Every structure is written in C-alpha cells, then in structure tokens.
Amino acid sequence: MEILVTGPDGVLGSNLVRELLSRNYNVSVLLEPGKDPITLKGLPIKLYYGNILDLEALNIAFTNKDIVFHCAASTSMFPARNEMVNKVNIDGVQNIINATLKHSIQRLIYVGTANSFGPGTTSAHPGNEESPYNSFKYGIDYLDSKYKAQQLMLKAVKEESLPAIIVNPTFMIGPYDSRPSSGAMILALYKNKVPGYSLGGKNFTAVKDVATAMANAITMGKIGECYILGNFNLTYKESFEKMATAIGAKVPTRKLSTKMVVAYGALSSFLAKVFKYYPSVTKELAVLSSEHHYYSAEKAHKELLMPQTPLETAAIECYEWFKENGYLKK
Image (cartoon, rainbow, N blue to C red; front, side, top):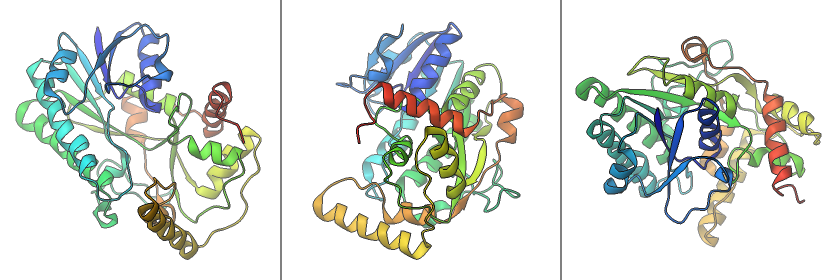
C-alpha cells in the first residue's frame, strides 16, 4: 500500500512516519522546498518537495497513492490574525480535497484539532465530537481556520463522497520535536524557566498514541466521522508536576493569578509587535491558559483503539530525544 504524508517533519508527522514504516507500508512524504528534515534522516521513504498551495506539486505527489495523511498546517498564533495561516489551513485543505478526488485516493486522514469542538470545563463533563465550536471569541485565526477547514472536509464528504476521516489531537508530547513545538514546555521545565502555573488545564496525550490511532484509521473508523485523539485531562499544576518529576526537574509551585498571566501575555504581545519577534506567550495564549479545555477521547479509544500511554512516559521520551540531539544546554 502506497501512503503519502504531508507535514512529515513535525512532531506528529515524524512519529506517524515511523509508525507506518513499522507496519511495512511504502511511505512517501511531501516536504516544503528547501527543508532539511533532521527527524527523517536515514528513513526508507520517498521524498517529494512542494507546497500544499501548489496544485502541480500535489498532483505529482498524489499520483499512484492509496492513502494520504494530511498533517501539514500553519500553527502560528502570532499575530492572532494572520492571512497566511488562513491560506495554508483553508485554501491548502481545499487543494488537498481536490487532489484526493482527482487521484481517487482510497482514504484521506485529515489532522484537525480538538479545539474545533467546544471544550468541557471539568473532567467530569468534557467536550466531545458533538460539542459545537465556540472559540471564535478568542479572535485567533489558527483556531478559526482549522474549524473552517474541518467544515470543508465534512461538506466534501457529504456532497462529493470524499473518503475522509478527521482526527482531532489534543496537546501532544513526545520525541522528534525538532522545532521544538509542544516540547518547549519540557525544555522550559528542565531549564527551570517556568515561573509558576496558571489556573487552567487541558487534555494531554503522548504523540505516539496519536500516531498509532492515525495508522489504525487506515482500516478502522468511519468515513465522515471526527475522532478526538487525547487522553488525560489535567490542570497545569498537575501536568507540570508529572512532567517535571519524570525528567528530574524542579516542580513549579507558584500559583499565578489569571490577572497576572493575562497582563504578562498582553505585555509580551506588545513588545513582540514593537521589536518584531515571535513571543513564547501572547495575550490570547495567556487567556487560554487560564481556562479549562477538557475533552473526551472515548470514541477514538473504542473505534481507533487509541493507546493511553502515561504522560510521564511521553515526557521522558521527549526529554531523551532532546538530550540526544543537543537541546539541553542551559
């Protein structure tokens, strides 16, 4: 079976490619031109180069493929309103849909986000695949664009018989995070740069569990369905305790008020605009970190047989990869 993965060099794509290879699939990847993906070095894969906004590049990469995993996306959160984010995440997805239909792909597995569903505010009442999207209020194009792209997918399934399944990961931790993305949290804990914990919480999962569920979706799951891929609903205090203890770092113990966190985020956003850099915290992210965003992944556990690796294990795997690749210099 011939499989194509877009966005293969991110933390999810890198783990997914390895999971697919372990199952003896023939794997090809679509990389942005000029990229030298360190997380894919030495793997027996075929490389294509092109942008998902380039229809010709997609047509070349999609030729003679059976399954496509669309992981590529712009995850930029700053500035909150960003036209390029919309182009990549909405126009790019429409191009993926068109190429899938043109080349008679057997199944398209599209990576959305759990944020495209309304979250629950307590572990006892988490959001699920039936919870309506309510994040327009944050004014973040990344969140809005992923929701709109999901609607494009579902519309194409209904009206054009697009053979698509949508997976919606929560916050993923694990190895091969070369940028780093979510792993920046592990690095900050290791380097004792986490001043405290905000009062919110969210759903955490091991990226390897997400990759396993996605690979299972080649033969499992139902066309036109969405699957939240997550595991543990934790406060930031709880998650920091688990991850810091696992990697032998100091556990943050200072409680940060919502007012303090949001004020810091607003100042950080202002300074980033003035001095032209990408901030680690923005006003919008500060607001999000002060809220609870909890989800149920019961559907994925049942229909995609998603594993439930402890967060501590995922943190150790992330830490060990950083250690082996020289990320831990203080």
